[in-house]
Length: 339
Ligand code: PEP
Ligand code: MN
Image: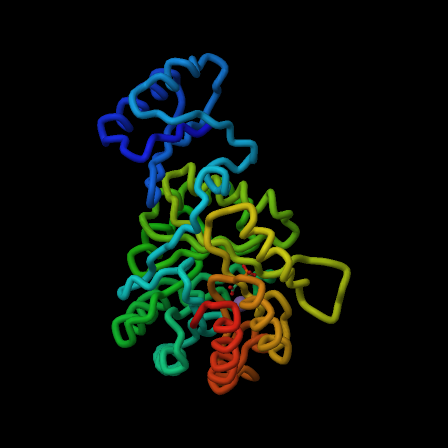
């Protein structure tokens, strides 16, 4: 349930409600909106005396949360969450569509630093690249590990770009969080519940990818794990799902973007690279994603896609990225946004 405070409720009034809901054994999440504060209460409500809470000073009303994903739901917070990332605190979820690009993996220092410069030059605000790669085959390149993270941090220092990189295990969260600005939870780990719970305490925003066969409600419940674990800064990423279709690597679901925007206040990012698997489809699907209301794009971009150590077929060149940015800006402007 949500306890909606009156617009002029004081901090003490809110604290009083928190004390009351704790007395009933519930866990509170306080959401401070532009015009009023609400206290979302999670837990077993059977013994709650609604009247006592409703009569507390400056409580306006109590409303139930119907969605199974409580904290991620639009019922709890009607305004889109804006999540500041990186050294320049660029907001994801604001009017500006953010673009984050980079290779699938950090391959070496020169490659990454050069790519970062070009990504910055193209107008992107973030740099993506994996240092820990969850690969389908145990014999495939698994990433450079901590050395890769150090290179990413150097690229951030050189360019001011926000670094987005994947964390694959509970044991390496602190290490990745030391170097990265945003921790990515990959599609294969969307239902790794101990990992979701643990990144709730990572102290950095999380980019959560939709699982390969996850429905939207399962995706939102995965986000709920992270929020419930203590981290409200969750960015959702539509990256396509596994279907019977074979002309694409995954089936990128453009409709998921407006549907998520109808269900959650969390920012929504589109990843057409994994969503299609083919470089020649990236521009069109990126433009479609912006038109559909994506708050950001996550794109794989490689200096030499033909020789990439992973995901070369879906990686665009820096030149293609530049062209995409120019077109995406026009699409964003057509829906009263910008890039
Ligand atoms: C990636 O971003 O390189 C990646 C592995 O993505 P996903 O988890 O969506 O497959
Ligand atoms: Mn990849």
